[in-house]
Length: 161
Image 1 (cartoon, rainbow, N blue to C red):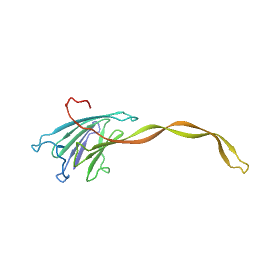
Image 2 (tube, helix red, strand yellow):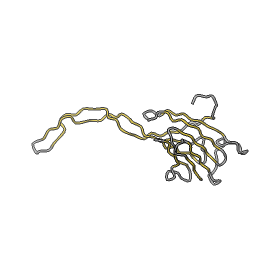
Image 3 (tube, helix red, strand yellow):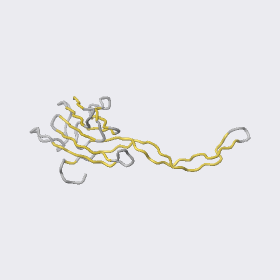
């Protein structure tokens, strides 16, 4: 497999070798070599950016992926024999080599609000140990990981994505 990318672009081209494993029925273009174009738009609550958008062109031996946010680059260390990983801005995408249309996932960082008990007044006991004498619950922002599966639709299908 070879990957091409441009620092000024959000496009990643992946050339797949013939040893990429079996393909799921209907997930790739017809054997005549015609390419199929798919698109995605995914809302990720709490993420910045909140919308992940892009297109993927799949032919028998090549995947062209354009994703936002960009720019994109191939994650060589994150790729394996079963999937291809790449990063577009703050989002990591993974494409399953055996079913690149139906098994595309993303992982990104999000901010979540959690309730946490915070000590507001400390006291010292008779042995000199400090303890919390009064606490309250506060909302605290924490960073967390969010993952999901992208729903690819044929490009220009007219359906809401």
